[in-house]
Image (cartoon, rainbow, N blue to C red; front, side, top):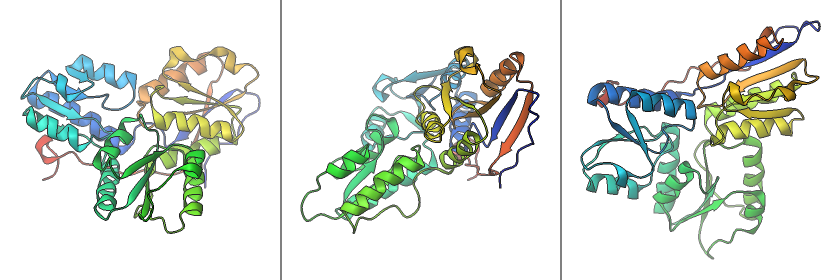
Length: 320
């Protein structure tokens, strides 16, 4: 059941989604970089953005993190953190050859997908990986079994993908996709390949599911939905798309400076939420600005309570 206050039509209002913002995997990854800086001192190198949020990256840079595109850019023997999106075995091998002190901040839910890819490849399956081919998470998963994996990005891909004759077929998904879009692709794959095997449990992460469900509720109650998140954040973009598919105008807002006040014309109720990699301070700044513009009532829409926590590894002070 959703809980929301009864609106006062005389006042403009904000409907604030709960849950929103950081998920357990993001909190863990950011905490691991911060803890590595405490233990080892600056610089600590991070391969790719630790999470897809510009504010988070800039904040960690100020503390001494150095973000690089490749492990080849990290000095031999230095500390290197793998981002929450995961890496391929080739990256791990290269890092070992360079004697890097690796700290793996891969989200446990992404690691689960990697394990499933290895399992399917071991049994000779062709793996249809539903996701965006250029996303770091998908690149890492494909790297687990590149000769066995085909990326499927759209329903049309699912209709036309060709499988080597006589091979078994399985599918996996990127963790940050839209539930509805993934369902459409999966249904087409099952139609074409009735014996296709899927993961043991849903690959789309709990946080993506929860935030998309909250957006659907927002779309039924607000005239405009604003999603706080960076433009390279897959889960944030999917949230905007979900709102739009449910009939409400929606925009991605990287920070309060990106708020276009023309969006607010004729709007009495604004839904506000945040992607799983967006910090709460950015939500607070947006809500404050909306308050200055006359949206001085804030109601909270709660769709589910989250209590998931992913512990840090023992080497960084987590449980051993």
